[in-house]
Length: 417
Picture 1 (cartoon, rainbow, N blue to C red):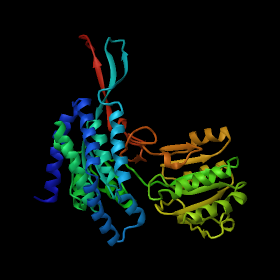
Picture 2 (picture 1 turned 90 degrees about the vertical axis):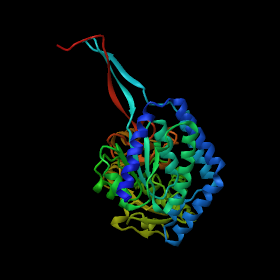
Picture 3 (picture 1 turned 180 degrees about the horizontal axis):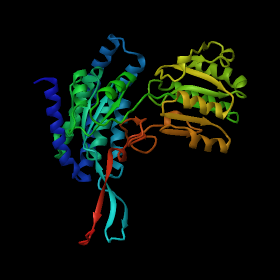
Picture 4 (picture 1 turned 45 degrees about the horizontal axis):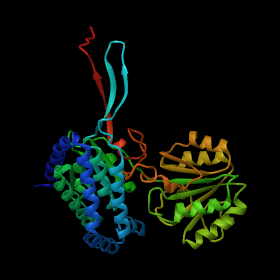
């Protein structure tokens, strides 16, 4: 069987499984999720052993430290994944929820019901946790998951998928509710051509993967593009908070999509704040690429080039620019932002309101770290990623974003005439 034939056959099995999931009772779906969480905890040793093979190969192949960090599974991370699954159990099932029932003059009553999308294809790199997050969210929302992880995580993904399949078998749900595609580039292209089988594809990874999917997809795509995230420190901001939020955003986990990539500082704050901030960043091993105003104030920084702005470093590198005021910050983000996450630190209420209204991003934050743009932190449980396109989801994709709505009509023999 060729890769194309294998991919199509698996897609057809997932399509058939999606019909059973559409009407699966919440209790049965939740039982499967609890079994997945239990399986993760019971099998942490074999999961880590499989993951160690992937990490060793990644180091041998020269993958970046940021990629290796995203690839690595520890006891704490496995426990975090299991807890995220349990959080999904606790969330209300969106499937079948009816909204906006209204009686029309004709006598009919109309409303909209949440229904699953069908077969959701996830194409992702490096992050094996996505295998569980996607499977769990799709199961709860009544969708079949067609998963194509990267070759760098092949052993980890296979180990995690086996736990999901065991849980599905244990609870009587179809095994093909979650399908793991071959970790080959040819498989990605084949999935993207499964019109009439795959209902939507969600790419999650680097710019190259996103562009490949956008160029080759014949099925609908919800883009999860790069996170060029900014923090603007306004004139009224507390300098100590500015340092703390910058370190949290950049240094704690620099390889994630909600990490801080560019700091914007009000001109009035720059002389006092930037030297102190430079010292804190240096202690964390962060390389600073500063514009012509910030550079002389940040001893040890590198003079920024034009292409350092609007760039997702995914490493301990931070671009810094001084702006004249709020309007300057808004203009910078309009030019360089990616629609992902934008934060402001300010004590001025009118500036918070302008930030909320005028910044075009999937999540805008007032006096909080960019790292809070996360499904778990926002109350969604796990997430499939952070959508930067606007149809039909914008921001972290949880259960509701994995459903669509169909019109429903109740009548009593009415005719239109």
